[in-house]
Image (tube, rainbow, N blue to C red; front, side, top):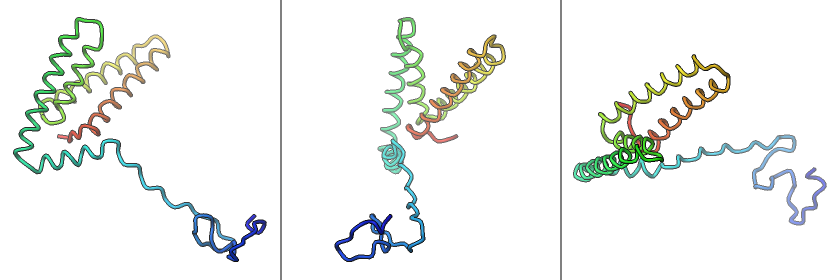
Length: 158
């Protein structure tokens, strides 16, 4: 394979591969390990660490998180009787608040447990395999949303 190539620079074709890695004539090229991809919001945890290191900035940050999360919950509750994503907006506000406040984190964890119980009940009493599959997807989406919220919002396990 390498012997068929014409090398004009006078170098031995077995001495180095295309990427410049030297190897013995019978040795297979081993790929270098690929470094893990950084998390999508890795910069957010760095910013949070910087905020938590400064008490005055941390206090202002907690106040802002409380105001924003509270407003999102109020807007979501106002949207509940209207067609649209009212409860989804309420849960987003709860996730925002649970990123900084232990009380709301406990509510979020309790709600997740109740949703798991609901999906387990649906799965047990489902008359068809299609409904059981929907229950599995619902439970998986609750887990994925909860894990993603913890990863992106930086909520610590309390």
